[in-house]
Length: 406
Picture 1 (cartoon, one colour):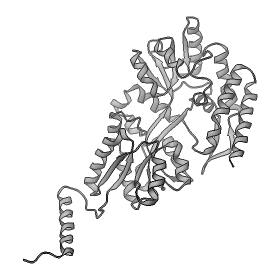
Picture 2 (spheres, helix red, strand yellow; picture 1 turned 135 degrees about the vertical axis):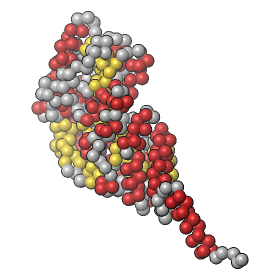
Picture 3 (cartoon, helix red, strand yellow; picture 1 turned 180 degrees about the vertical axis):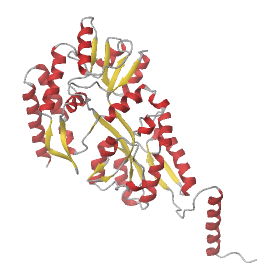
Picture 4 (tube, one colour; picture 1 turned 30 degrees about the horizontal axis):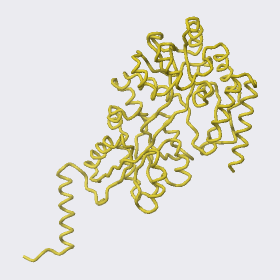
């Protein structure tokens, strides 16, 4: 028998591969090269497992590579143009504006996804100019961490917190602590009263419309000043002192993130996590929320398949497994409602708080906000300027700095 020609051999090889895929219950795909995914190192095993399941059904191989979420944005911009980058990659919410502006992230075809169970805020943050650029897989914010020995149930209102704080002060204890001078924390109160950094628009943010000295922001800072003036939150309360007081049993509650829980657990505190109590306007404080998203690279030649893979990585089952592996809080409502998920205090509390959260503007102008606002809060609390004057001064400085960016 003569040796088969090269063309015939290749044809038989493709046919044999297709038959093997069908026998294993998969679909036939002519894609020879794998889809490449860049994910966080701690998620690699979970992503590989979910991708393998998807590969069985689609017949499309997937190659999962571990890249730090802090490095992916820059690396995609370097590797993508020369054909070395991923089809799917993850990034932090604060990087989205840059990814869209530089054309690094491609718009995602939402018709290929079921987005009905995702938190509204998690999708709004990934949408620019009416187009979806990311699918969320993790959400975080600060919330109320409280000592159940002092508060068996979390306080419902800020008025209740203040009353309890005054009662505990007489005993040498504190009701609620947080770093007042830190704008990242105190913004939650400002946003709850209607303050905002930049006004949202259909295209993103309007840096010329700043709401940090409006009526709501002024009211919020006056409340914060009352807490300081009455000694309910003393001078020197920072992100180290506040959790330390909680761990020593000297504070009933603090406002902080999930990163603090390890020390609370080590201290043996019977704790709970809940949304920051409602203000006297009936609104919840709205702290900044941080998100992580899956993106489709604009350099990918297989964007539809990449989107289908993202859909598989963000199903209820996939995100539940991610949660069980301690990979963060999933922004899917149906996962957060699962009995063994919502029984975890950090999930019940931080998940609920994130639903009331504020998106962190991911535009360059945000960089010039932090220092003036930290200073304004400190100046107002010291009484060097009135609340209105301190905030107005900060907004003027921010506007001047933005003008210098242009």
